[in-house]
Amino acid sequence: MIITYIKYALCFFIFTLGAPEVFAQNKFNLPTKDQDKIRFELINNLIILPVELNGVKLSFLLDSGVSKPILFNITNTDSLQINEVETIFLRGLGGGEAVRALRSRRNFIKIGDAININQDIYVVFDQSINFTPRLGVPIHGIIGYDLFKDFVVEINYRRKFIKLHKPETYTYKDCRKCTSFNLNFHNDKPYIEGNIEIADQSKKVKLLIDSGSSDGLWLFENDSIGIISDSINYFEDFLGRGLSGNVYGKRSKIDAFSLDKFQLTNVNVAFPDSTSISHARLIQDRNGSLSGEILKRFHVIMDYPNSKISLRKNKNFNDDFRYNRSGIVLEQRGQRIVQERNSAPVFDSYGNDKRVAFVIDRAGYYSYKLQPAFKIVDLRKNSPAEKSGLMTNDQLLSINGKSTLNLKLEDIMGFFQADYGKTIRVTIERDTEIMKFQFDLENPFKQEKLP
Image (cartoon, rainbow, N blue to C red; front, side, top):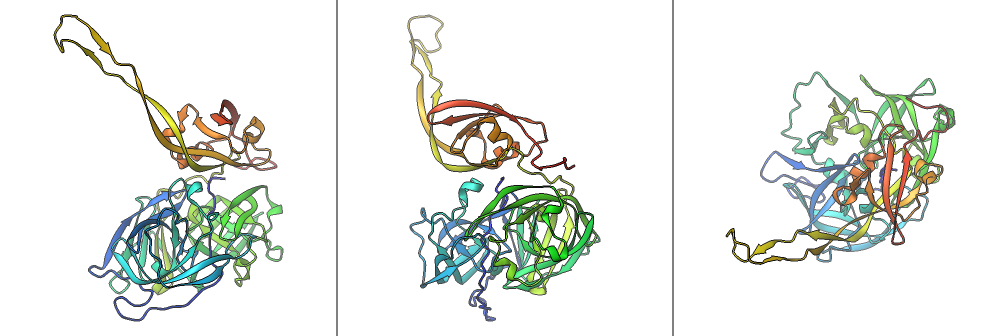
């Protein structure tokens, strides 16, 4: 898996609509201008924004699939002050129990120049809920509805920025290549209708727009309407970590997915197991989710105040949908000490004088640095990596001749999405022993090869 899914969707909601004042309860505002542009990181189709919470600089995922901001992974932010707390329990995706959290009121939050001085935050202290290892960068929380509801939000996936526009001053530009769609909301989350082609049949589907998932589509199996994974090729896989535990299911491809005139073919799809999504399936007529692997193919304008979304194709639109073909689930787990030999200066007794007297060649010396450690945390059964002899807890040192010291987690995972037949050579450390392995990337599907 290539961090194919990070999901923390809340199954509860609390309506706290803002009053009309500039700094109303739970309301963002741009005090001195009509719009603001904010740069973000895009990692595995996920948008990571810089956020300031009560004076502390953090990183949040922008997730249209959540109704309230959640803060986690706060071990290293001891200076963060959390205000006015009460204990609650949250439940999200995954088959585990509800998670204990604190609801904190009247927090100051700043995203770009947009500020809210009365923000509710849900704080989770369970250290197992930590998505940093799967992305390779610090992630402290998520935010969705509370930001989207107060602005027209323009998302430029290609140039990696969002623009926040005040709804009362925003004007849509003439755009012949754009198409607008109505949004329906349930528990403060946006839904859109589209069409899928699966097993040579066309189906109309209602999907949650979920920017907090890096997959293409999730579909909920339903025999009565013909959404059945057994009708197409698939492989079993780990889909990701939800707020209430791990999510497993099947991965496959469908013939096509379309939103009006926009049609994508040979689209990646996941069918999560019913236990992990039992609460999500309570939403009437919901058939799944539309996520980052598809959203990144558009220039997106999310207009919650007017209940619509506008899409325009970008240069990502025709990119292939790819899977991790190695079977390796890799995480950035802590750090390792790396010894580096530094070049030693050579001195002579006369500086630049050509006479030779004596030369001092100072012995080379070493410096030590802390570098990210990349570990294999899971291997798909019968995958090329597993069959080569690789094991969980192996620490990856190099891949195809490139040291992991010079690579990000996303760079490494990119090797595993190469074409079928690509040879992967890795050097790993296992119990202090350095070992080398080699395997060829294979089609992960059980039966005949898909295009």
